[in-house]
Amino acid sequence: MSCPSLQQVANISSIITGIGAVLGAFAYIRHRYAFHRKLKALEKYLLKEKLDKKDNGQRTLIRIISSVGLTEDEILQISFSNPKVRRVVKVGEDNLAKTLLFEYDPDGKSK
Image (cartoon, rainbow, N blue to C red; front, side, top):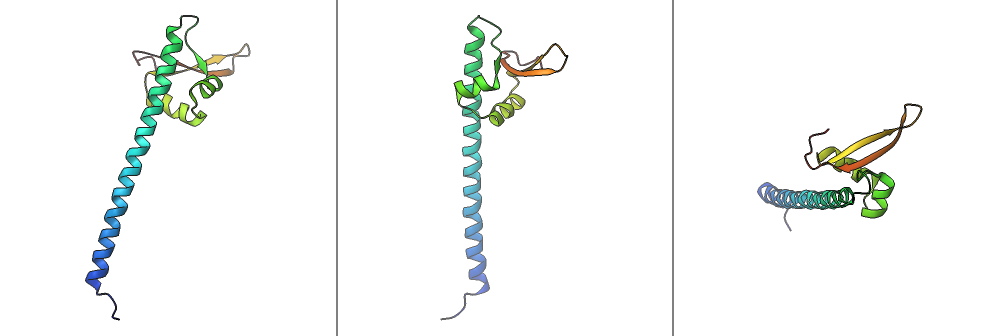
């Protein structure tokens, strides 16, 4: 049995690289789709809460985590990448940040 030629090794390497690139592109598209789906779920939840008219529709991380099923990190990532999800800091009597609230901002201009 003879060793593969340099050309054969190059061809095999090229095929493996192409497969890796396709798998990488697929994983990236899947990740972006999942992120978009989570973004829309958070938007929908905050819009529903805002339209409820009981309050401003501002919700805490804990409430969103329990209602929508997103992690704290996902909620923060969405709020920084989506202008329609607004972050509001609630200040205590000592003038220090007490709570971080999230609300739907239909215009996306108040950041």
